[in-house]
Length: 279
Image (cartoon, rainbow, N blue to C red; front, side, top):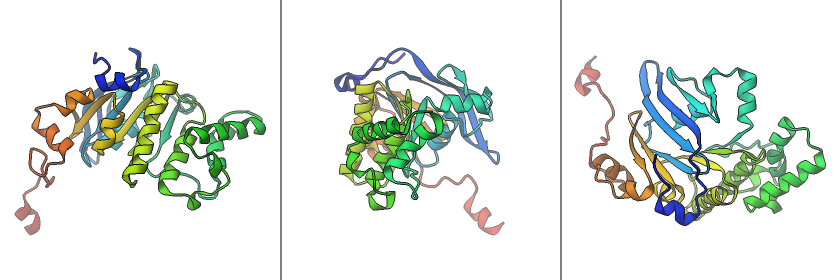
């Protein structure tokens, strides 16, 4: 078992030895093309795990499988003690109330105000009085620094603010786990840094377990307690940030430093170019 890293301890990581997610021999293929080819990993309560890798490596597919949105061809995901893909719809719905998701775009409803977006999970999944829901909405928006924007609609706020509202909504039901899909995508460096700080604060202050899917290396090293790198559907590196940064593996080094030349090729086609043109 990998102990908490030096960087994680410096941030005040609340990681425990309890496994909250276990992925076992996960295989997923689309139209016969393998996307995940035997992924094994564990996520511990209270840690921030970064899943990184280039475009097409299987990051988003792994995330979708881990939240029950995609059924694997082989293998399983055990989430909070439950075999995710053995559950019926009622069991899956009950489990989904225990985790939140920050989608890449924020995925807010444009016809609703910021406050209504955050209130939606509370209205759908609880029997709380409206007065309590209003208080809860203000509390969640305060966590992301946007309490004064409750009455605006998503089109009236910036992309970074929409991401933060999406995070407030993901927190509405006080989840044990939050999944982040490219949280810094499309944001300027300052706003991306704000999102990173929110992720770290949630882990440190609330003990929330975070799974962050990203290819943004600055963000990855800022928030991670532990990092996993995927390549061609497999885990090729795993460890604390300082170990990943110091690795001698040429594939990992090429990726984290953004080097154009190395074992990760530009061209991904398997077929012969001339034969393909003449076929």
